[in-house]
Structure formats: C-alpha cells, structure tokens
Image 1 (cartoon, helix red, strand yellow):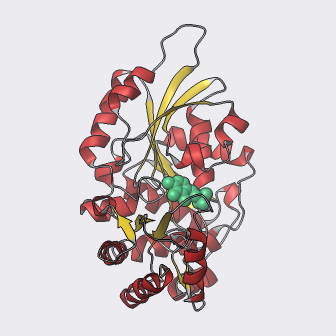
Image 2 (cartoon, helix red, strand yellow):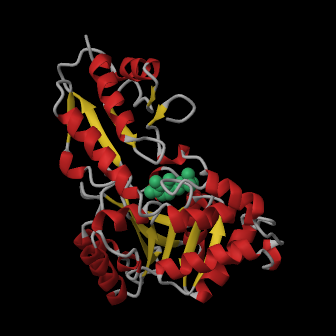
Length: 350
Ligand SMILES: *Cc1c(COP(=O)(O)O)cnc(C)c1O
C-alpha cells in the first residue's frame, strides 16, 4: 500500500525507506563536480565493485545513463544496434539521435527479450562510405517490454563474442539488472562481465528516490563524466541522493525475490480466473503483462477505472488495446496481491 492504494503502475513509484531517509539526513556532503562529495564517491565505488567494473558515475535517471553511455560510445553518424522493443528505442524521446546524431538500427526482439544474433550480425555495416559506422550493440536485461524477461549469462556471452569478433562495444541497459541476477540466483557480475558499460537504476525496485549509475572502465567513465557535464547533469551536493542509493545497494537487492514471488502469485491468480490471458512462461521477475480475454465485454479503460475505485492503480492501456502491465515492488505485499485478484474478478463483470 502506498498512500492508500496498491500501485502497480511501475516500480518507480517506490519511496525511500525510513533507513534511506535517515541516511539522506545524515549524509556527509561536498561539491560533486569538484569530486568532493564523499557520499557520491562511496556510491560510485560500491556500484563499480558490485558490477565488477573499474569505475562508475552517478546520473539523474536511467534515461540519462543510457544517453550518456551512447554518447560516450558513439560519435555523430555512428550507429547502435538496438531491439525494436528496447527502452532506448521506445521510451527515451529519441535522445541519442536528437542530441548525438547517432543512428539506430532496430532489430525485432525475440519474445524473450533477446536479439537474434544472426540478425545482429547481418546488421553490422561494412566500410562503404555510404553507410553509417556500426559501433555498439545495446541490450536490455531484464527486458521491460518483453515482460521483465531475463537474458541468461550464456546469451550475454554470445553477444560479447560476436562484438569481439566484429570489434564492437556492448552496452547493457540494466535498469533492472539486479532483478535478473536475483531471478537467476547468480551474482550480478555473471551478467555484467560481458559488457563494456552498464546502467542500472536505484530508483526502481531498489526504492531509492532518484538516480542511476553507469559503470565501465576508468577511461570510459572519465569520458562519460564529461558528457554528463555537457548534458547539464553535473550535480553538486548530490550526496543527499547517493546516501539513499547506498542503502538501496546494501539492503534492497535480496528482497527483490519477494517482488518476483508476488508477481508470480498475481499471474497465476489471473491465469486461473475467467477473463484473463497470461503467458506464465514470461513472468520471470517483477513485471507481468496480461490481456483481457475475447469474451470480456467491458473495455480496458473501464477495467482500469473499476480497479482504481477498488484502490488498485494501473496504467490504462488506451482505448484500442486490451493488454495491461503490472509491476510489483516493496510497497506491494502478498495481501495486496490477494486484494488485487478479488478486485480484478469484480472489474471484468459484464
Ligand atoms: C525505467 C527504465 C529506464 C530508465 O528510466 P528512467 O525513468 O529514466 O529512470 C531505462 N531502461 C529500462 C529498461 C527501464 O525500464
């Protein structure tokens, strides 16, 4: 429950825990653009260590992390290979093209969030002067629009091998990479060892109020820091935010398993209920997609409204769609899931 509602719109709605608020209040601060904020420095060191990289830089959002990373990897006229369902392609306002002159080659994602590697290979450009220069492959783990699906380590390894063979870099949009690691039961480094750069979000399932971190080599992060400044993202006493991020990394990772169990419970409950279609194989972490069955006469907007009246917030899929997304997080417990299932039963009555 959050302000009297079960809010399943996203895990971004999570709020700082009491321990985070205390850490924010007590944080030692300095001017981070001068490198003087000890709390930001600690968050960056901790993040780099967790990801198995040399260095890290704190940024305002996941979008800024991806944008900064792409601008660091690619120059104007260079090309990044991305999935057609990627957050970078769909939901970042075309930032890398608008601000960096970076071309995007989109490849249809497989249903599980991977990119077919033969298609990736075929997309890599030659040296002909007509063509943009392929620089980067960007992958996403967990994959949001494919249902919070997990890309396994062996797939990540294959992407790395392909990139090495063709002299390309690999960026991981790891907004929810800790969900992937927890779902697999592996250290997150098992996944990040295969990429040159990774962005992860502190402000989603990990419940910090603001912020993401980019990790990579020392040289890459030094260049990314300059780009962050260009974008206006050099923050000053950012330690008030970083303090919450440190608590997020120390206390909030292991509990993501509860969110996964709750998403599973919700998905299984809906699958057992008339009126809903759920692909249970794709419910692997804290995200689930489901559809209204053809025999449900009420439209999705009405379902959204009826759920709201029963204290459950969902993003309405829009008048022409019947597919919903729900996301579990630390402010949704097992009892909330049971309430949500009852509410759904009521909401689809003709
Ligand atoms: C949420 C998200 C981001 C970044 O989102 P911000 O709201 O900018 O922090 C990036 N990639 C994926 C896959 C996401 O789900």
